[in-house]
Image 1: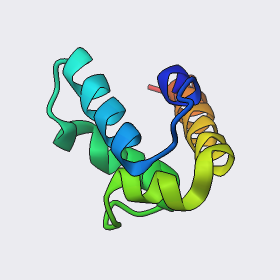
Image 2: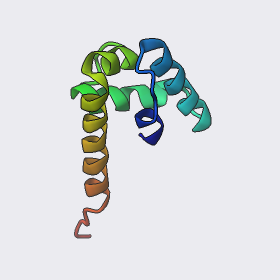
Image 3: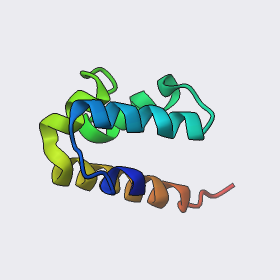
Length: 83
């Protein structure tokens, strides 16, 4: 998230390059993170390319949706179940 928020160039090309770099740094294929990003941004895993979504939503809305998704994931990770 920090890497995307630091981007000055919110073009399709710059976003696509950064997303690929993030996946490479995490040592995973983009197919592992793409569906998660699509779900966070659109509420569905069936959507256009992630860079296309980011461009369409623009930076402020994209980053807000990603931050919301991270907060939800953090809350879910903290839920304790009775065993």
